[in-house]
Amino acid sequence: MKKILVTGGTGYIGSHTVVELLKNPDYSIDIIDNLSNSKEHVVDLIAEIAGKKPNFIKGDLLDFELLKSLFEKNDYDIIIHFAGLKAVGESVEKPLEYYENNIQSTINLLRLVRTDKPTDFIFSSSATVYGEQDSPKCVETMQTGTKLTNPYGRTKYFIEEILKDYANTNPNFCATILRYFNPVGAHPSGLLGEDPNGIPNNLMPVVMRTYTGEIPALNIFGDDYDTPDGTARRDYIHVVDLARGHIASLEHSKPGISIYNLGTGLPTSVKEIIAAFEEASGKKLNTNIAPRRSGDLPECWADPSKANAELGWHTELTIADAIRDTLNYLNKQ
Ligand code: NAD
Ligand code: UD1
Image (cartoon, rainbow, N blue to C red; front, top):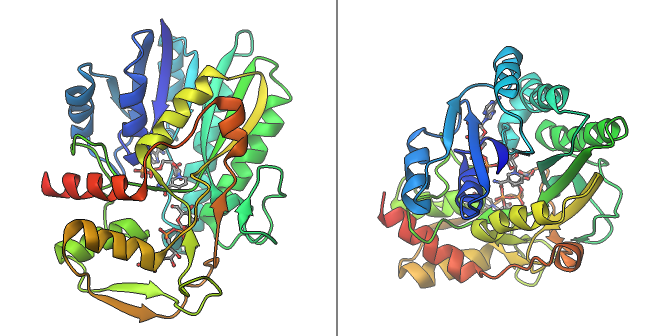
């Protein structure tokens, strides 16, 4: 049996990953989450899909004493660290909260990792660490950390650097940094999906709320970019493919730091996402052309060839699959 701690496991990506992890009978899973952006009921939904219930601890990673007692009771072989605050705009308003929550949480976990036996550690990083590059196609070897536009992005960059420094001190530390591109979609069961608290910022949740009428119209941030249809292009990856990327990473874990992009390698524009959603739902969405959003890049997508070659991982699902699963999730709410 391998003992796994999943931080942020009731959140969007964490919950989908726990479902995939539970397919392995040799994994015993503890989730820790402070429920600041998720609900405890997600644990029951995971159990309904997986046929097995993970152990849930309601707790904050900033509470070092709580974490210490958890590590004293459990000898974790694997730590998958999703927990973090992720709203870019909010991070500009509350930088200290973001630096403390995201960075101190990670330091607290690292202080408890054993040095006398191997520990696999997976960290949820982001394409945001690439900042602005000469080419929109991001490769792991590119220099990171320059021209980052917000504290959220900087927390991801700083944590990557902290992990590299820590790895130099612990030869048994097997860390994988996964740089996610734009996760979208929901579990095909319709039970799990993205359900952000408050006003959403990311495109797909805004599309969803425009569809349900909670948002009167979707603002397309800029249609004058130098792209085929003038709107910005991103790499949208189905959350189930992303979750599977974590399983593949665990199967190839090795001492030191390994870094992988998890994306499809295909750019899709804002207008293409809207058109695909309208086609699948049969409903026209209200849209406005709005000014460019500050800090946005015209284009950014993954070169996923390293993950393809080394992890044997490939995306299997399309944007049409993600939209179908999103609509199914919405209909079940
Ligand atoms: P999410 O908000 O749905 O999940 C994060 C979970 O962490 C939430 O359930 C929240 O309650 C919990 N949490 C936050 N701070 C905590 C703390 N101090 N102690 C305990 N629990 C805490 O977000 P997500 O979309 O599932 O993202 C997971 C990770 O992936 C995050 O680190 C995020 O920055 C990163 N990421 C997300 C995206 C994206 O677009 N969703 C893209 C790139 C990277
Ligand atoms: C954003 C974050 C990034 C984070 C990523 C995933 C910024 C500057 N970057 O990236 O740090 O890692 O989310 O969480 O916020 N769009 C609209 N109208 C909307 C919403 C979005 O036109 O109402 C457009 C955006 O301008 C962008 C695209 O849709 O071109 C995708 O936006 P979003 O989902 O916010 O992701 P990113 O900008 O890629």
